[in-house]
Length: 197
Image 1: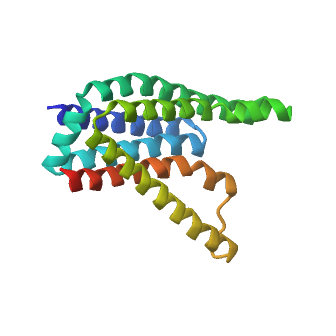
Image 2 (image 1 turned 120 degrees about the vertical axis):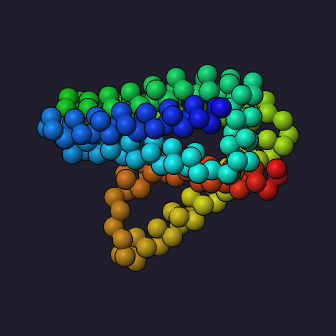
């Protein structure tokens, strides 16, 4: 029931994002702008495929969690902050490329998208305090897996960078820490939930 709703939502979001990417490609948008929408479309498509092929026990767990009071409160606080984050990412990128010159103002504008993510982290901590002991254990194990996985990836990447095997720009490397944490958290949560079910 809820799984089908989420699957349909993810599929529609993927089509909308791909539609923007195609439109932007024909309308002469920058490659980066087209790439952002193509990346969003790919992420939503992968999420839809993951939902479509997830085991029944995982879908049932997600439905149960999705309908819980604690998770509803989490979503109610988290999604507005994520929308503000997305707006700030696009807005600050445009401002930094087109108008703002003073260094102090550039720093404030550049750091602005991090503020809603800080709020999301606080909301997540509040969510952890409101769930039952078993769900808290699953969440904490998932966070631990994410921290260990991202630390290992960045440690290995650092050694490869020092060995001049790869050359990743520092800004690009840093901006991927949070998305990799979220992705690793999702994988950790899947396996922790399977372990404790």
